[in-house]
Length: 198
Image (tube, rainbow, N blue to C red):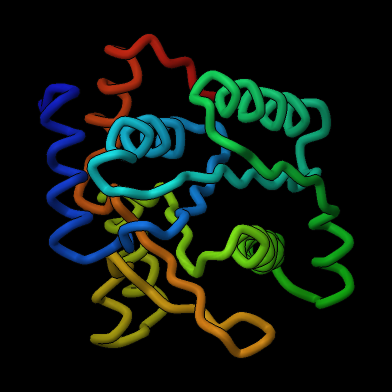
């Protein structure tokens, strides 16, 4: 198991190794309120001077779980205030989007979420969004791709940095600073810090 400082050092090494954060450019951090994203924002908050970046939290209430979704948004708002990080928190109807575009709920949620992230990034003058995907998510992705028969490309899984096109054809950089970190280490980090993720 890694200690708290070791985890942050590992993330810093990974960020530098893959050039995930551009110095002197703001960084949007997607925070759901779950353990992975709470760990991510806490580590990045501790590294913001070293990385020479300004953080901005983005949270989307998908309106899928009623009062629980609203409580997630309240939790992230409180977390942002505690960390003294500005936040954009919005609520959108993912089910309506799903019906309109005839998508699975998962696809609809992903499209709405990344469109929201892109809007927040544009508003604060950046092209980079950090998300809390972990080594466990990577394993799940590779297994799902294998089951779908995606071939060798699919077996690569998620990359530390991927590019998405915005509607205006500009690029959005999606970075995954926790991609080498196991969920058990994240839970240990949160427990040691007294964090209570949703």
